Image 1 (cartoon, rainbow, N blue to C red):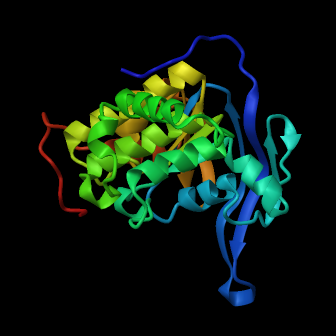
Image 2: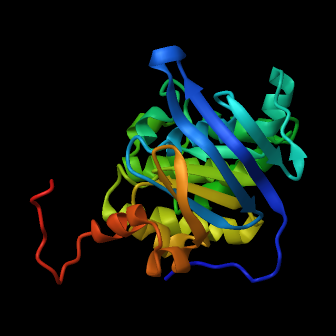
Length: 275
């Protein structure tokens, strides 16, 4: 069942107008994201759905400020985003964080888990708190994701399973409490049981701190289950967007209809001729 917030009007936290990303020049030019418009509201769970090569990951990198926008504007909390210079970019990153597809590549494997969590507290301005209070905060964050801090202390991330590593990433988010979380295929490399747990934790965290969650995925079934709003992306453009139930139950674009038809159904014979 899809998770929804109340119907009250919420403020825009991240808005884009004509956002475009072009790689290369001349004959080698590739338009990865082509003049897309979007408006993500506070506390919403938004999903950007598209196949590989649709431009969704490139868009996510622009939202994070990891790559520059070629054309168009991005507005953050109602104002034109300004992340020029390292100081402004660090300040922006306090409020927008990410969970990536591969948990094994998300950590510096030479840093112990204690250091990973302490870095989050330092980023929040808690560097001068007493050590006991820091341990209490890290314990609470781990408990939120069903991990025991006392069992993690002095361990390295590579000693955890993939599901545990993703839960540790959510514990980081619990400590940082950003306004926006961008989750790029966060469950695609973990087992089905862990996948459900991760999704439940992310929606619970959204409810607790009114965080906007932006999922990036190819899985339209996942989008229907968790999203308030859905954006369908093909060849760098949004071909359809709106309330998740409206878009997925009553799709208008041919591409959306194809994504839905490609979802296997256990009560129908699977057509593998196009695979």
